[in-house]
Length: 111
Length: 113
Image 1 (cartoon, rainbow over the protein chains, first blue to last red):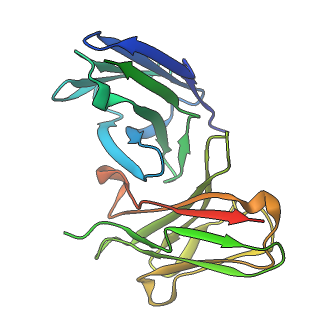
Image 2 (cartoon, rainbow over the protein chains, first blue to last red):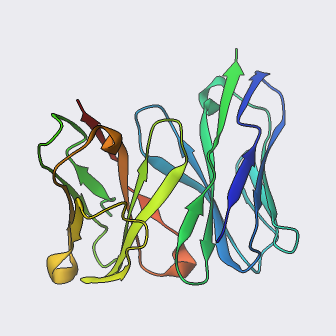
């Protein structure tokens, strides 16, 4: 059974810092991995989708990497802003079309 | 294109009552999923439809939960009778295929009192 772990559970940084969120998964037989953002009381917004054959994806200040063999993904946020404050979720999709989520990292960027 | 829409956004019901949540996926998306997040815990899979068929319902917690997707369009998730531990946020997602990932709705926050 796939298990997804996110570290740290919470992170607080001053504005302008670069930061890395970590995601690990136990079963490397995945189809893709997706990073989401959830704002309080809101739904999930997809940030980046990495197919199993890819190593990384970039969108603006966000860069996600995937090392399938070691069961790891990182989300790098450059030059963090207060508007980046949210919970970031890593989700792994298995080959049988099931998606498993980590518990999330709650990020606070202080002005 | 319109996103995934969920109704209602919030629902407060008493223990023992029935609640029905609705999800309208993106038009043309054959895959529809239900997930829920109980307070303080990770988001967990409930079930997966491919068109009107239940592909995987291994995450449904018990027989108080009933999901339907008649005609392969919108889906409903009924909880009857609701219990306190059913409180949480219920998310619906849709996808045309594995390649494109999921699009999530805004969720329905269910509070059972």
